[in-house]
Length: 199
Image 1 (cartoon, helix red, strand yellow):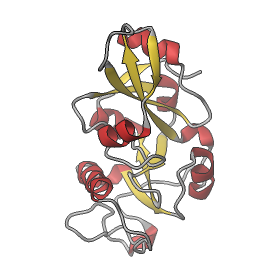
Image 2 (tube, helix red, strand yellow; image 1 turned 90 degrees about the vertical axis):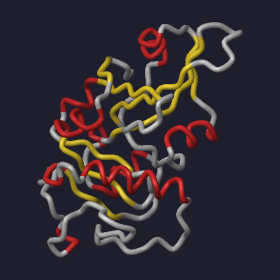
Image 3 (cartoon, rainbow, N blue to C red; image 1 turned 90 degrees about the horizontal axis):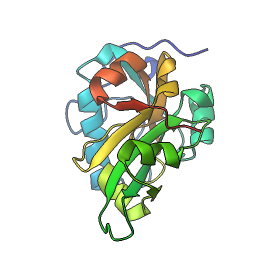
Image 4 (cartoon, one colour; image 1 turned 135 degrees about the vertical axis):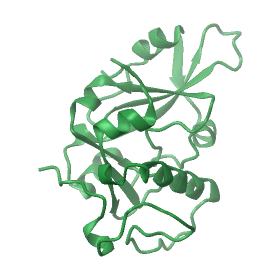
């Protein structure tokens, strides 16, 4: 059963789950490993955005995990409700050096349909972005990429089947933090292009 969401989390002692300053008010203990500044910046930016609708989400603390299936087990929800986010590169021709980048978000139990993404972007050459580029554009460590784009060169594409669930779950730009978010609020906050891009 999907846990009910509220503006506070049980493990925060009733405090709001959003970040309002440099401290972590989620109730999670500090990680033992240092956090990359870019990753921490994206984490705080995400929670700042979510705090505009605090009743729609909650923070989940767990052991560091970047694998979608294993993270879903730690969070306690069906894999289909996990928002699996992958940075892709689309090129129109072999000579198109730069190309376009897209953040494809699909249910955790599905894979990205590269042909469908190519059709949406007008490209017949779509592949996975290299790790360095994916982390730079998303502002997240691999395995913790959020289903939001804060970069102007990263177009957000979301599979419509993911949005049929009442809530979705994803790592919050950190391997040891996740977010459970009301799907209606996600659509309002993320402004995604909704397509059929999962196979």
